[in-house]
Length: 176
Image 1: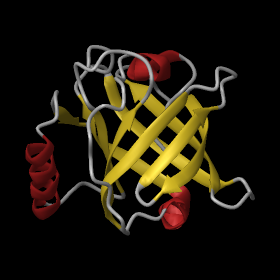
Image 2 (image 1 turned 90 degrees about the vertical axis):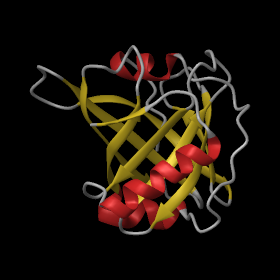
Image 3 (image 1 turned 135 degrees about the horizontal axis):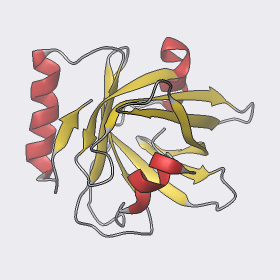
């Protein structure tokens, strides 16, 4: 769900993802099965970290569908930059819910890169806030994202800001 692996923007977005060395507490209410069924498994990214490689990014969404195996999902990420007419496939991953609030994703691009996503806040039917980390890149920024079914309301924005302050994450989130 956060594992935009593969080509183009996808590689650039994940290129600098740092190691999983930032301890976080996941939302024990998170359930990937429920998450993947909401709005037919489609979530829109509304906040992304500011990086050198995503300044032209104007839209991104993901789809998640069960593979038919218990606890396993196929997640695809799509994105669009300024000047592009269509969303392009940024890549996909096989996602497995590893424990309450945490997911393990393996890229389906033949490179089998493994990423961990931790859901810090999940409000069913509204939004989810999560971090993504891996085994490569530097740790100059903590990659975290907010996906939602519509723009966040002021209370939801305040909650995202509260989480940002609680963890003192490196880097800044921006709206897309």
